Amino acid sequence: MSQFEGAVIREQGVTFAVVVRPSILDSTLEANEAIQSFQPVFPGLPIVLMAQDGRGRPTYYGRRDLSKFMANVPLRNVPWRRYTLN
Image (cartoon, rainbow, N blue to C red):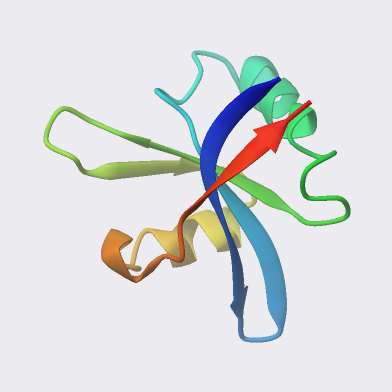
C-alpha cells in the first residue's frame, strides 16, 4: 500500500485526475505504465502525471489538452489530497 498526492479536477465539462510523481519518467512507456497503475484509484478518469523541477516549476505528462490546461493552473488552486494505492 502506498500513498501519494493527487487531485480530481472538474473543468469545462471534463473530469480528470492529477497525480504527483517525484519525476516524469524517462520514457513514454514507463510514464504510460505509471498512469495505468493509478487507474484503480481513479477508475474511468484520464490521468495526468505532475512533477516539479528544482525550482518548483511543474511539468505535466498525459493527455495533451489536459497537460496544457494544467500548465496554466497555479498549484495553490489545485485541490490536493492524499490518496492510497493498494
